[in-house]
Length: 125
Image (cartoon, rainbow, N blue to C red; front, top):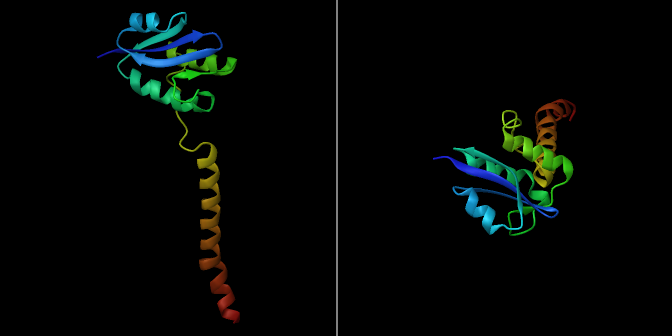
């Protein structure tokens, strides 16, 4: 069943969500103004990905985001379908990226020492 994913502007905040009844949401989020909406079978999935993508500017415990102009334009393009074909979510971001990078380097260093340097040094000792 098709659902809507929407972007509603309320001052400098933006609400990103998914619903089956867009009219009801517009009434609930008054005086917010509907910027763009997309009717799609995977609205909940797209909404979840947008929430993850903009998690750094999300107001805690809400569906409101303080998007800058480039993030707003990107979100609108995704919801209009123009950016949806090239849309992907990176696996590693922020702290996860740094920790993965460090662990990878430690692992590579360990294997180089264990299987590259130690056999050479054992010939001399």
